[in-house]
Image 1 (cartoon, rainbow, N blue to C red):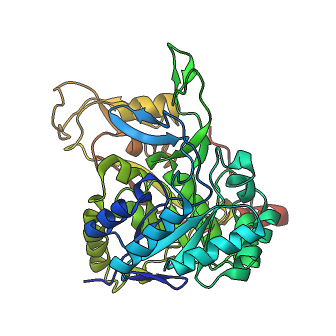
Image 2: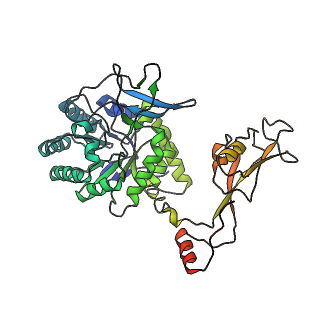
Image 3: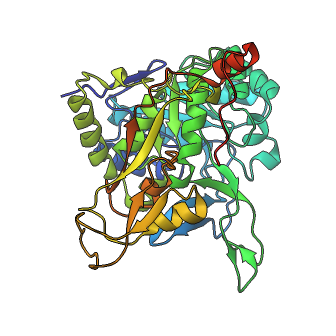
Length: 436
């Protein structure tokens, strides 16, 4: 059985699954429940001067029959006193010495940062996470993403923190920025031990068309909020990879954003995360989802012959590169398994109207008829010469593995865009004909 234990910048936990700084990590009671379920760590809901929250606070983006594909909140940091939060952190760490307990902090002046760091250390926290990501409420007070969007301010504040730091410091980055590597580099320059990403994305998820006010509704008004959940996972993966691949960052990463199962976690780890943090999935399904996460990741590592989760960390970083490095002479085309085809012909419609007109409707002939197909109804057929391998048909097909993409030998050597341009300039080859 693979070893799932991790060490992120000196913070150890028995597995990479951490509860993110959010409503599920608000109290000692929740921390105990999380650890009882099997979570390896908890990042406490952000501690700072207690705030007053509004009612209501959440809204969601639903797609078809799936609820909470995207989740929006206008809730702020902890509304409980600094003293109570650190008291409960101490209680949790004493009860669960083998688990990671991280204090999430947000304050303003140099003196206050020093004071919060000492309190976190005295409470027994394994590390701290600096919340430079919150995109609503706190940023309007000069904190949260107001810091995270300004690399110079990040460098200054992290520098203050490191003056008093005796435990590892993780800097939590905002995705509401053009290039996330810039604040990551600033954190590195200031001496941070690790980074975490992504915090929530600025959003308005829906408008109540009767009241003509976006949700969440607060006495006739609303506000932009922080967007998270499964819908943000691709954005988070891209930003995690950007920092993992940047030679000027090279800090341990705690990945956050749309993680709901072991596969999501494995993808984040493959792109450079050491630990992964989960929030929305817990709010949707509860703490016990970690049981399947642990089993799934362990089985995957065993199947791949990996002895530890550390062997997976960063494995996919180097294969993600600039577009200009891709092989122009590589080709894939679609292939249909007619025994699985149900006759919806959605692949034909999608290709005909939305892609490259590379699928025809023909008579079934001697080919198999999949479940639910009516005899005599036309079936889709790939036009091999017209197929550009865009993948759209395989993506829209509702039957798993009915349409797959297969390699085609073009008989041509690999050639990148840069090489193509060089050969054009030298006269070694003529321009590739445009697609008709």
